[in-house]
Image (cartoon, rainbow, N blue to C red; front, side, top):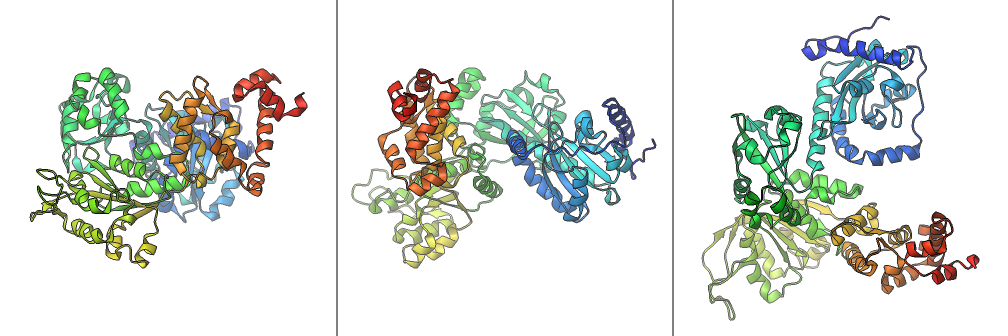
Amino acid sequence: MERQTAPHRTTAWEDSMPLIIESSHQRSQKFGLRPDSSVDFGPVPKTDLSLLLEQNRMLHTHAVPAMETLYQQIVNTHNMVLLTDANGVIVHSLGDDDFLEKASRVALKPGAAWSEQSKGTNAIGTAIAEQAAVLVHADQHYLTANHFLTCSAAPIADHLGNVIGVLDVSGDQRSFHKHTMALVRMSALMIENQLFSATFEDVITLHFHARPEFIGTLMEGIASFSPGGRFLAANRNGLFQLGLSYRELQSHTFSSLFGLPVSALYEHYRAASPGLLNLCMHSGVRVAGRAQLRISNSVFQQSLTHDRPSAVAANQAAAAKRRLSGLRYLRTGDPQLELMIDKVTRVLGHDIPIMIMGETGTGKELLAQAIHNDSPRAMNPFVAVNCASIPETLIESELFGYEDGAFTGARKKGAVGKILQANGGTLFLDEIGDMPFSLQARLLRVLQERMVTPLGSDKSIPVNVELICATNHNLRNRIAQGLFREDLYYRLNGLVVKLPPLRERSDLETVVKKILATESNNGRYHVSQELLLLFHRHRWPGNFRQLTNLLRTAIVMAGDEHEICLSHMPDDFLDDMEQAPAQEEMTACGGNLEELEQSAILKSLAAHGGNVSATARALGVSRNTIYRKVPNLK
């Protein structure tokens, strides 16, 4: 059959397209497809689609923002943006209403498979087969039913180069535009870079390019290294600039590739405002670089014995300051939290004060530490002050410091206040709503003038801090009550974010797993399904602080057992569940606690083939308890 080639082919890449199309048509024939074959409308069931989304959660999370940006560039052009998994099954789509109806006629919607085996030559399936960006226009599609389409697709690869998905723009062939493919390829690269940054935990990530102005753009190279400097991975542009294959790079270190010891890298980022690094690659080419050091203390200690111990040991003091709390560690799938983290990420390094709202125990200090650890000030101090826990008579000297003899009981030689301790780094003022009214004017002056005057001194000291505040108060109400200064409120009111309480979050199971992994060091504990049901019903007035303490105690109670069960829970927790309103119990779990326990036991019995002893061991209770809870077994 004759095949029409797409117009405007002017580049070498575009000239190669007919060969790709020809090869794809030959594969389509071998799959037993005919050009006049009817369209396979068999999308996966909704339940399977949900599973598919969960299996591709990382890809979906990082792709959706890029898809939305891409869609804004092509809106009202009779097109749609599609994301598929590695097998070509569509997992997400955005499109013009006037084109969606046409698209649905050929199963161009979530759940539908667009591999070559299913649809013959098409941009998605052919991009997967060729592992390259592909344009398929009009009757280049193998199936006649798809000839009305023009499609541009680019594969999305992980840090090892494996294709994990495809980004595609499909539209009416009459709306073809030669720039669409460039937009798709750029967006796919953007997604890859986002995924690359989120892949590794506890790493040094270097962004580099021979031209400094390209750092922070899609042209930059990105490479990740262990805390001791061992090479881990690089993105496409990183591999290209380094001029080595992934296999060849496995034997390299940060020092061998960029001519700078890791110790010097750590030292560079101890400065309050570190500039770009001036590096010389192994090839002799000079590049500019900016590094992000996201290293927890525990991983740092491990690196002393596994990754170039002499280089790392020289910087132990600097790395030990950092705790495991980068923003990506907080991503657990909850939509509210994802939106909040995206907002925070956008203001990092822009000197915008951040106000964190939320109930007690929701993790406000953890979020503040994560913001600091992801900011350009990460290697500088993070100083936290709880304005509610320091006596009113001492908070002024704690914040601003004092000179020798400034007041009765003052230490000789005075003391540096918390604000100056945070110089070059981040000052976190927790429970800012409880700061004494008399000190609020002085804090406002410091923030405006960037100068601190210690008590008893007539000298002002310049200070440069990033400010993060947190409160569980409604500050507008505090202003109305005359307890908080309005001018200070607006000085602190840069970006305001709210941490949702635990009971309103959708990621409880993920949170439980993370806490268990952290508290038990080896992550060998898990919570039984019946206990998870109770967790979902609980109101958690103490939020994460309460949940963490509960699980920490349960780990001790469980001992050598791997599963944490009802028997490992403290009495007050079980009492709270018994006292929960009956209607809430019926709505949330379909019955009261007794019925819930009986249901859990019956499920466990079924799982163990009716073996009471095995069930008792699994639930952490005695055989007598099983017989007492399920009388029909007698």
